[in-house]
Image 1 (tube, rainbow, N blue to C red):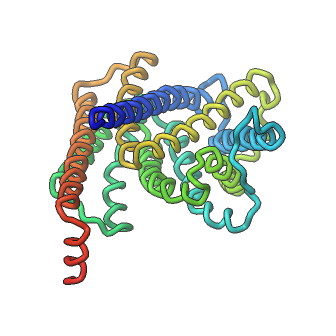
Image 2 (cartoon, helix red, strand yellow):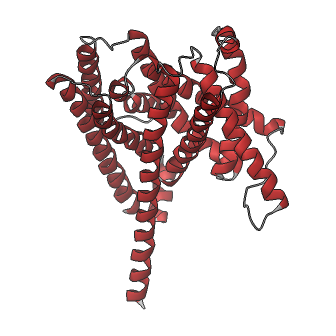
Length: 347
């Protein structure tokens, strides 16, 4: 009997590991593809449209439309399409989801602006401070102290980032503006990961519903930003606005935007905000190698060293946090429920 229970637990654990592996792999593929597509949309000579927020807004609109169509199909053909019920026009839902949507437009907006001004290869280092901001916000917002090894790992990440910026500044592709947007993107992503975990409870842990609300609200929030950024004239005077090839590549970018938003939320759901951050960092390392080959960029030894420092320090930070959680779990399990009540009463 006990052997059967052990086998059942092992099978369940194996299934969980396989699910996490598949979700993380899917995130890597879609995320890398999205970066290359967006880079082409934002700064290629072929497209040549000076409206980065408009491109980002269009991707949000495509995602919202896909979710809306899926919602309609789910209502009329529930046996074919399973889409969770929800009303995006509900004022209570709008109010609860607004913080996430604000962080979402800050994240994707800053990331796309960073990608517009820097190369895909440097994009990894430019946005490598997410782990550091994650640690800072964990202390500031949750009042959870960080251990000395974790702080040392974050200091190494900062050192790798600074070395990368120093080396990139010696090339013709360096952009201070793009680097600043990368830092802002890292900051926003750290907050977005934390807020996503919180916001899932408002939609009964439904990733599809969260994606629907988030993209719909974000597409509305982006409109005044497009106007304030002075992109209207560039959009209206763009000669290829209604040409097939431009519409096709914009739709491709929109589909990628929808897919990355969904798999990002899914990865956070099946893992954690911290694991999502580390997965994104490791993915970006592979992305950097691909970008240097694709664009035939030759980088210095110290440039590659900065990438290695950021990656290894991020991996070390993950290991440190994992060991800390294991110690906390063993410490908590060492006390019986009665012991815990006695300790609580003494406090």
